[in-house]
Amino acid sequence: MIYWQLFLAFLIPNIIGYGGGPAIIPLIEAEVVGRHGWMTAQSFAETLALGNALPSPIATKMAGYIGFEVAGWGGAVVAVLATVVPSLLLMLGALGVLYRHRESPRVKRMSQWVRPVIAMMMAWLALSFLETGVESAGLWHTLGIASVAAVALLRFRVHPALVVAGGLLYGALFLGGS
Image 1 (cartoon, rainbow, N blue to C red):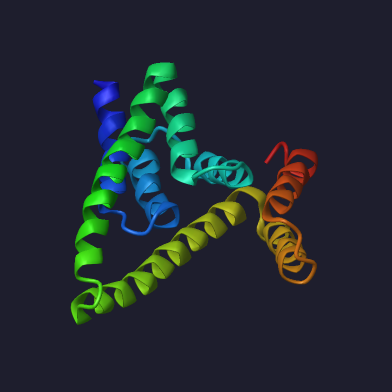
Image 2 (cartoon, rainbow, N blue to C red):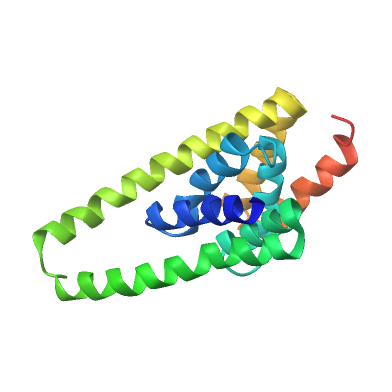
């Protein structure tokens, strides 16, 4: 039964989440944290941060890790397959249709509406992570980490993986008990 639940938990977000990893992360969180309770919001945020620091698509890394945590190697395989195979088949079909109708005004309008929806979903996810950070680490730690990360990314163009690693190191050194 757990394999079926894992399969559906990753299949559904990957089918309805048009736009790749950033678009489906909030949907995966709703399944993994909200619906099934396999992880807390904090552990999901940490998994996402670690996944962002590693190469390759975020959804497959998260599926493999969460599947493994929930049901071992079999769970990892089921979750990754539920993530990759349906997306691949749908993408090939959709690309064929979009390519045939690429000059259609409807297709162009559809593409214009997708970007703001994804942006709003990512904003919601960021606010959710901010709330979780404030609850677990406190307002000042959260604001400090966010400020240092923003300066490192925007001003000094530090690679995001290094910023995530720095945040993890700070958390391990100064927030280990919170």
